[in-house]
Length: 253
Image 1 (cartoon, rainbow, N blue to C red):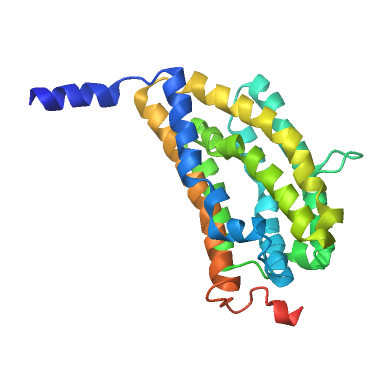
Image 2 (image 1 turned 90 degrees about the horizontal axis):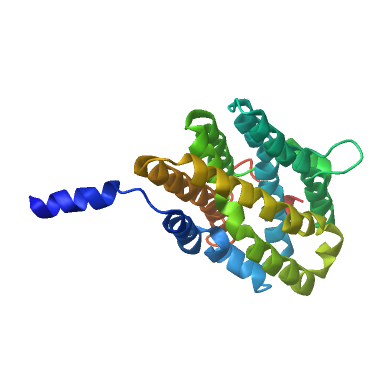
């Protein structure tokens, strides 16, 4: 009984800032999608053009939902300082009149891959697994606490290294995509500031051990959502390569 009491005290102890940051980063090291076989094939130059086309087309659905996700988070905060900082994310993807946004840059990547922007924007050929995973992300930020919604965005803590690796691999192995890499180059500068703000928010607002664990779990779920999208792509276009009815079929393009 005494041992259990001590164990309970440890489990309820508030993590220090350093411990919380370490726990969050541990999630990324273990579960971020940089380790997924589909990404490993991409970075080794082992994907075919149709497989890359499938990735670009399906990933667009996720890209198009990012400003929707951020608008939901904006709507849930009563703090004007938070909203002023967070609305930058919407503009980064939607653009702001003259400056183009990430969605437009992704459509240029699609065109470089040999897909028409009209086809990609319709989202009719998105894999069901990708659609379900992305929609689950919107549900997370809509229904969970604001703290958890913000914490789920912390995958940006780990994206910098992945994006740098991806840019180099795409240039080396898929030179025909060279005209469409602006999206990744822009994110190298945008993501670090976004991640720093979100991390500080989580550190400041996770005031109990339960809230800290909820934030960690939300980040874990976001990593699962990213991984699930690649699972669907791998199954449909790599092994066993069985895209479902209605999904993008390379031989039909």
